[in-house]
Amino acid sequence: MEKQLVLIETKGQKRRPSWALDERTRQTGRQGVAEARKALAKAIKRTAA
Image (cartoon, rainbow, N blue to C red; front, side, top):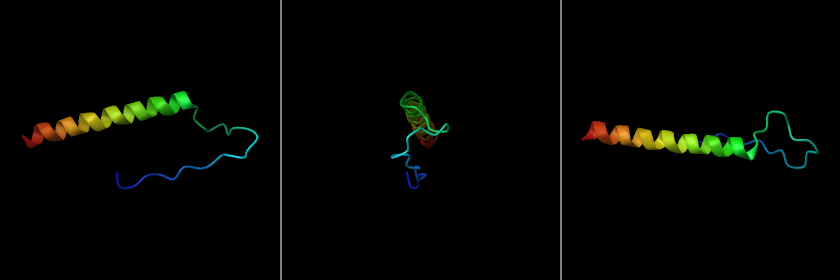
């Protein structure tokens, strides 16, 4: 991966911002990205063969 968005730090705040994702949502997102990368790699391999 060449570029990645910069994360906004929320440490030191008393309340969690309403837009902040909880860990379960983050993990679900990470899993989805991993599955998408796997599918893309498979498709690239299939078209290259």
